[in-house]
Length: 122
Image (cartoon, rainbow, N blue to C red; front, side, top):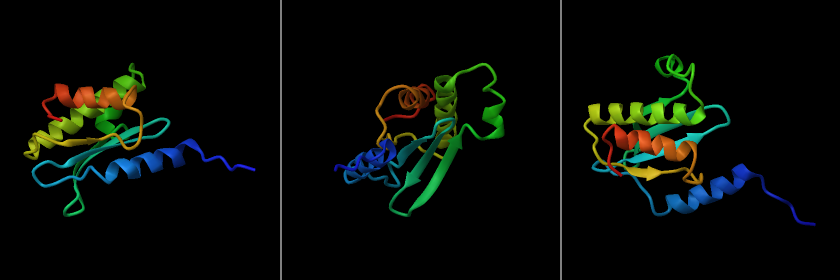
């Protein structure tokens, strides 16, 4: 009998396949997205040093205050704008977008759109 994998296991396989090609450098770090059922997280990572340069998520108090009347897509756009503002404040203009094995639609696409609107290039 066949054993079925869950969706998250399939996502991890896709993410590993993409990560073979995508890597963050000091000149162009990686913008990594993680999406849970209720929250979304974004990090800008320098893979050569293995450090997170800036991060943002919907769990922060500053973001929680803005989430009263928006849906999950709106929350993702707010996080995208916040991560872009923090990245430009840290001197980062260009990044490599790592969608984390998720399909580029919905909340992942809204986060990317918010980051682009706030001035991040990818």
